[in-house]
Length: 112
Length: 115
Image (cartoon, rainbow over all chains, first blue to last red; front, side, top):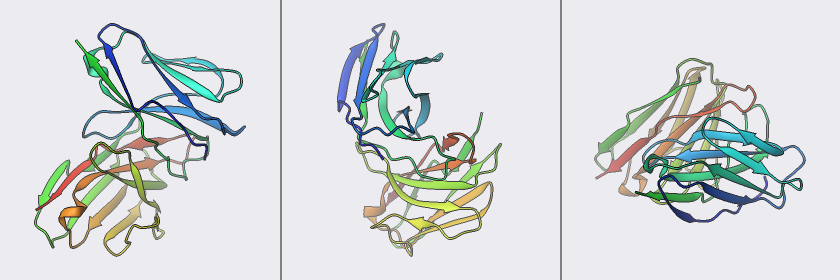
């Protein structure tokens, strides 16, 4: 599985856009990039997944450059409730029989 | 969407006793379930993978006789922490997969405190 590197922590204020970048230099051809969000004392929650270019859903956008060696999770206009740990995972889109491997994640703190 | 129910959400037990944690997939059949452990301010660490009707596969360093995993049906997996000790205090999270395209769903976690 490709190793990922992301900032340990980030601070932001309400209403700002937050961009969290993840490096995955050894990403394989079949690998997808997936981001999870985890609130304190809760299980992780799927946010977004992509393979290349840009993916957008109602929660976030995911930007993936052509070389796919990094990706950026963009959270538009964050609120206090977006304070959480965000994990970037890279792996092939298999049938779900292999466990997800979580890195250290990025702890986002949103201030009022 | 897919829902995984994990129970109890928190439990306090005495040292030396056993605790069972349940993980249920409510609206799908979970062919594979995963159990993670998470210590404060740390990431999730995989403990074991279980397929319905088969013995669980444990990660290196996880004692299979201490952390008993049963996946007897397609909707239920249990993790029993036997002879719990204070160092077993942690946040335990299950994840279930339906085997479909990237079908991972996580439970809400169980906070175990051993006193």
